[in-house]
Each structure stands twice: as structure tokens, then as C-alpha cells.
Length: 119
Image (tube, rainbow, N blue to C red; front, top):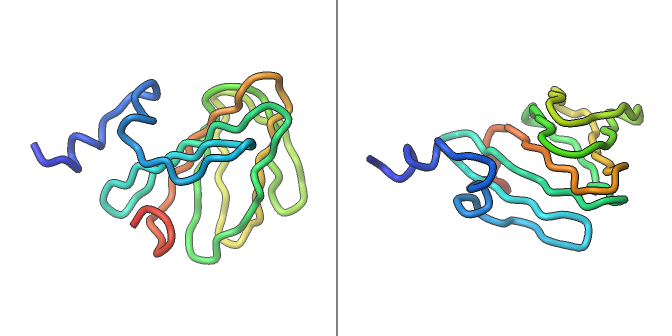
């Protein structure tokens, strides 16, 4: 079985072993797993911290929250998120995630590969 096919199936507990760590700081850890034209990215956002926030002019994104409590900002509007919430982020919409809980906030993002992510 080709390696790309094996990498397509994983569980959250093994994600960090199969994915590449692309960022690590006192705020968060970010792991990317690229398969074909897609990237599955997992962020572990520490309590009281926030992502830097950004927008994409060329791609949409889906975020699936798997653990913890927080808020997501979409173009200046904040709304609560928790495990099992799914948020669609359209192109060109500024988005940022805040961990408002006392445990790590974990979420998965699905997006198309870009020249600077997932290559």
C-alpha cells in the first residue's frame, strides 16, 4: 500500500506521530498532514492563548473542534466554540481562535494545499 494511502487513515491519538509539526510556541502546537491536494492540520491551543489570526485569499477552510472550549473570530465577530462544533471559513475572511477554557483547545482544519503550507 502506498505511503500516502496509509497516511489517509489515522486517529487523533496518533495524529502527532504521523503529521509534521510546523509550529510550536508557548501559545500552541500545529501539526500538518498533507494527502494529495488537501491538508489536515491540528492545532493544540493552550489555555488563555489565541492564534495570530489570518485570512486566505485563495482557499476556504473548515474547522472541527474536538476538545476544549473557546471562541472563533470571523471578520471581527466572536462566537463560542466547543467540541463537535464545525465552522466554515470562506475565502478572504479573517479568522482567529481563542482558548477561553482551562484546558487545551484542540481543533482540526481542512484546506487545500497552498505554496506555503502542506508542500
